[in-house]
Amino acid sequence: MSDQSPPVPPSLLKLEHLRIRSELHFAARRALNERRKEISDQRTHLRQEMAKHGQRRETLAKLDRWMAALDAVDAVVATAYDELSASSGDVGAYRAAAEHLQQTVADWGLSQ
Image 1 (cartoon, rainbow, N blue to C red):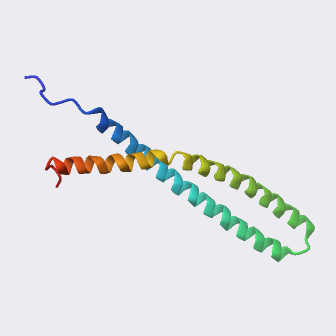
Image 2: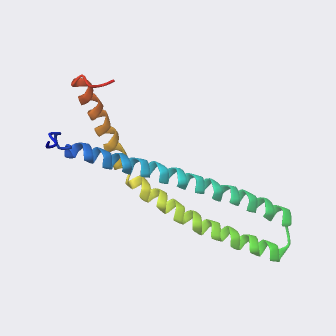
């Protein structure tokens, strides 16, 4: 007995591809936002340490180096966030396609 099922429409496969890219986008965005918060928390901690150690030159020099490292890491995270924002078109395309699919299914009387 041969399989008589119709082929899967390419548009459905494209929708799934866009859904995956959308999920990856939001997962990466959450991760980058968490990293930004960690860096901000570390900066706050460093500022408190700097205030606490006042005039201790050696300690302040170490804290300054740590702050410079945080600034450099923050720049990398900011660049990654900007690059991620540039890919948000896939998210919009997925949402539009998903809404269109839902409406089409409803028009066919197949929605639940």
